[in-house]
Length: 378
Image 1: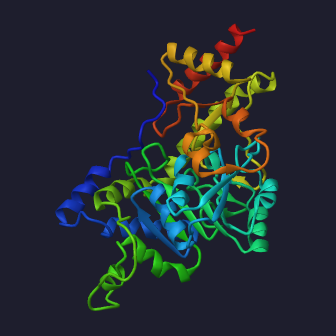
Image 2: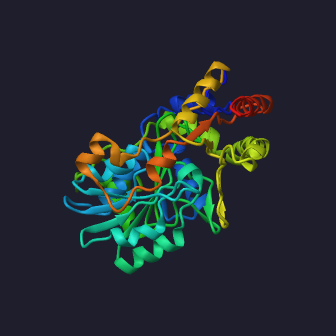
Image 3: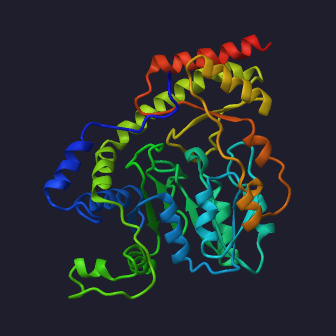
């Protein structure tokens, strides 16, 4: 069976975890957490990066820093993971969903302005599959209406938009290091902060509402409880695991790109024949080969294709159920405008196996079976 995902592993993970244990420092913010934070800052140019226990928690931290309050509205796509909305619902805000673009599956930037009300506080673009949203337009709208931009770049590390790393363009950016991501620590994430004025508050929220970070830097002689907050620090063992992969980020990305390109080139004849649609990478966008998906004609065809691949020992999967159709989405959010593409495109999309150690011959076999399905479906 060719599984859908295998978490990345480079070989140094256990060595670094052992090093953390032997240093008697396995709680958060040890040397490996600091190395990971510094790597993200250097790679993205963001003012501050803070490793977190998940991208969910990074987004919650962003919501705290944005001072989201009950009754506020936050604009986002409905085609995203639940955490994008959860972080703001927890603050009492209303997620306002708008339709997506069918080419990238990202939020349709041309629909954002019409969804803005006097209650709107932030825009949350989600960079699906590591392919950037149209950030120039989004940032212009945010500036015009004095809104914050919180990038859900869970899938976007090592991707860019017109030379700018994803996660570093908006006021805040959120990365994921879940086991399904390009680089993993099991569960984990990071918050990226563009403006230095938010850094101290971010450290306080992340450290259970204390000024402990200033204490460890020697800026104060004791730390105390100064605000509300929670424990968003990952274990040093998780950070050590992640560091082994960040050290090899370029090699991992290069390997994933080779897999992505093999899929694209091999399946292009099917797309040219109008049988399937392949991912679109707009001009100015550089992606990280986070996933490879194809679009079938409709839900019925996708269901048959997934079953056919399973019968041939290939695990392919569909992705999000649009949030505005989910029970919690109906309860806490609302959809602005018409759902022309969100549901329709989500029912067509199917993700093929994609991971660092996927072999060339395995990709060839997967493509062969996809083509066989369409040959038999004539």
